[in-house]
Amino acid sequence: MKKDFFTWLHFKKAKPISPHSDIKTVPLPESQTGTVNVNVQHLEPQQLTYGCGQSIGKQREHNEDCIVALSIAIGGEKSSYPIGLFIVADGMGGHQYGEVASSAAARTLAGYVLKRFLPNLVNPSSGMDESIQDLMRSAINEAQRAVTLGAPGSGTTLTAALVLGQQITIGHVGDSRAYAIHPYGAGEALTRDHSLVKRLEELGQISPEEAAVHPQRNVLYRALGQGEVLEPDIFTAPFPPAGYLLLCSDGLWSVLSDSTIFNLVKTSKDLQSACQNLVDTANEAGGPDNISVIVAQLKT
Image 1 (cartoon, rainbow, N blue to C red):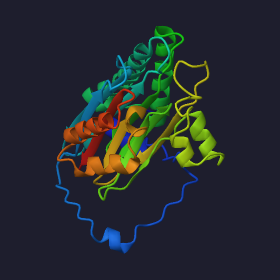
Image 2 (image 1 turned 135 degrees about the horizontal axis):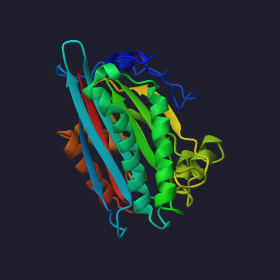
Image 3 (image 1 turned 30 degrees about the horizontal axis):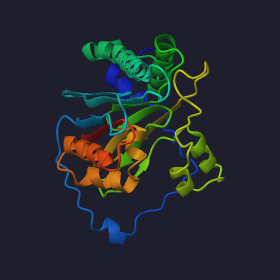
Image 4 (image 1 turned 45 degrees about the vertical axis):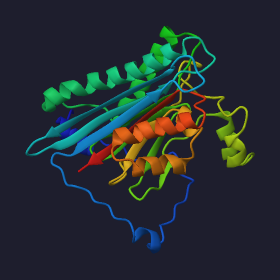
């Protein structure tokens, strides 16, 4: 039986699944947490704000990245939910029509998700009959078909984040990344790169330092448009409290360290400035690839 849309948001949530189940975390020492001062203004309804930035880079002739970013705020006496959809797709360099592949993937996924959600925004009683993760999986399958038909022989990464209230459902293929950044400046990658070098690192055959400079670090074993069978990573995670969600192509993370990325987001005056600062810094570091970044913050 279908549920009211806002009831569905409460009870149709898929169980969170971490893509890094083998990673252990430890609490920060009191000397660090004691100095954290998070000043969060309470807003009603909750609002999901974002900034985005993009550059062709310093060494490429055209842009093969595509981004989508949108946010909707719904406020009412009984229901108050921000909804956001953020997508980064990076057309595979060296393949014909890489920019066509990335655009087809990002636009198709966005269109599929919006078609499922918009009727329920207009008429919440109509409900939805599939989980959020199932919705993301179906959207990625549609994107795969669009790339295969529209840009045969090409390929693209695809990292998408669907934000519903305080949860993020991520669909991921390739080596674009999603990060959670906490208000005290630390953060972690939510996604796992589908690259041969990253796999060697995970198996312990090379070190992270060796992986960072490996000549085949951009070779992917999983991407849209490459092969008939697609196995995307799909999982749900909480939005970092008072923190940020960042999506980017490898034109950013491959030239800037995680700590540099986190620090630039935390110290910038606003989200759009953060994105521009990240793009500028990546270009100053050589800009060897197209650069795309989206930074979102949930204000409750």
